Amino acid sequence: MLNNFRDALKPTLEKLGAKFATTGLSPNFWTTLGLVLAFASATVYALNGQISNIWFNSAIIGGILLLISGFFDIVDGQVARYTKKVSKRGGFLDSVFDKIAEVVIFAGLLIGGYAQPLLILLAITISLLVSYSRSRAESLGMKLQGIGIGERAERLLVIAIIGMIPGLMQYAIAIVIVIAGITFIQRIIFTAKNIKED
Image (cartoon, rainbow, N blue to C red; front, side, top):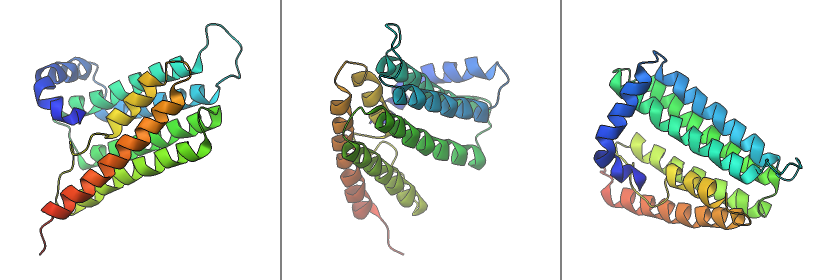
């Protein structure tokens, strides 16, 4: 859904790409940094309740790190486009790293005991099915970017932002299940209607 706003944000995103391109660092560097921050976020989530410190709130710190990770997930693509270094290798790494990041975030939430294990398992399972449906459709020549109300960005924003509110992480995970489930159905319907048989 947020992908549908990219055209409106294009000038801002282009400036972002230009700014980070001046560092001389490759798009793959920013992709990797986003993954590292996702692991950091997952680790903090996993430490829920294990550190007794009034300044340490795992849901808030984990959420902030997750948002920063998502920011660099935008940066890598913008730098690639600005420097004209868009490549199949970079696209592959970006896609795979995104899935790894999503899995480790949910693993961190599971270890941290934020919700019933079955809920977290359901959330990650449906999330991966959403990603698989896009990948499979694209292998058939169809574009599913922007199809559905709960793409990866939306799902992680729900976890990061709603999850920062004390006691609401389990509801954030439930929301992810619902929007991911709806998106999965939307993508199946869209693909079934628009697929071209040889």
